[in-house]
Image 1 (cartoon, rainbow over the protein chains, first blue to last red):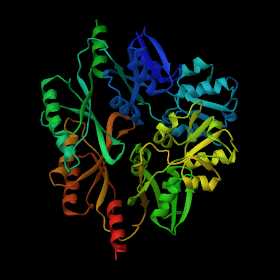
Image 2 (tube, chains in turn yellow, blue):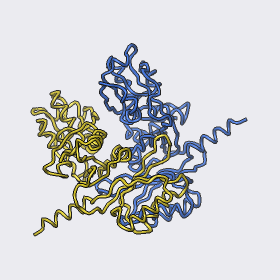
Image 3 (cartoon, rainbow over the protein chains, first blue to last red):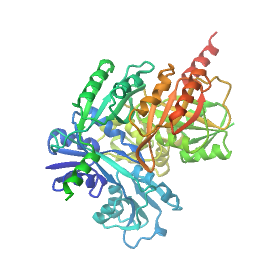
Length: 282
Length: 282
């Protein structure tokens, strides 16, 4: 099994891909688009993509790509995020003039970064990529914010550890694929829909779930390019798509939603954890 | 009147601030936080901040800062976004090895950027700041994506003009301030609220507006730091906060919402445009 992820070795996505399947061959790609492309075109069976962080919020680009491509979500995994300030051996806090990381990494360590003075904060495309930059360019006045594993991979030492502002910093990843990942029974469904441009339309859309006691776990809005201030909604529903109440709610929504697509139905990470725990119980 | 904005001279925020008041003294700050700080502490009477782009979506950081600070929204303005590829005089498209811009600027010109080959795309904190970088460091193999005004300010020439993927690329800015901006009657209200962590709670929250025919213009969710997968909702309502139906809806929401705050009630940009037009009519 080959799993595609975005970023360098040591990226949080690599650790998430490892959680999906311990023995899979992991293949790194530069961008989220390329991960979708690898699964679409075949070199990878599955792709692992961050979809939401408990501090920073949704990774909107991946919601957009789910609609552009036709690859369903087949599972989700959660990963606690622990950031470290990493530099070349021998470099001290006082030597630093620049700190590199992904904007989400920088945002998640805001309080720590404020304690550094005279240091330029530079946004990059990847946390582990920042560690690679510091190592490859042998920067002796710079550090990267990235995972402990990125430090190991690129030979950097932690100047400060667990520097994220909140301990409850968790990233949720989705797994996309052309085939189901396993036999685990689905209990969650992700959909995308639009509503007619009339007052009360979103309320009506939510009513199809609420009136059937189908739980709406998450609701997200995204602009529709070329139609200013009109939105595409993403919803996560706490039921399998073919569960009777959920199937009826979706049919009801389709009666008046100009667009409705099911982006995947899969087992939630919580249920997956519980199942693993009970398997391990004596 | 002194108005604070984020970015360099030539930033889109500077143009938005100019729309708010043609004769105001405009003061540039490095970050959104500093704009809030300047209005909080007094050096500026008003601050202008981007809140949403019709292609890229919400600027979440500013929603977060509205809740952290207690400065109300007093107005909103809209600005069409036109991006140009700017380089030093004499530099041609074939010379380019790097293109700098804010991630939103890069995202908004994705199709154009794909036509460039062998060029590294580098994210920075500011569109106009990228133009400044190219000019200050005299980069003869780089270009910036920024406004025509940023090109004028920093002495760069357009290698390509109006390179944004969509013509309907509009950024909406809010104006924050300790006092009302003018006498314009409010017809819009922005609120932040949480809902109890039970199924159907969001539906119930929207019902207080829908059952009173109060239009919900926009709904946005943001994670609550330290409480994974719980959300703060931001809503824009198409009524003044003291209009009877809206006041009753807000009182109804307060009955069961653990947290509810009005972030401002103000005249919508659409109404403001209409008022200006009718004043100008013969």
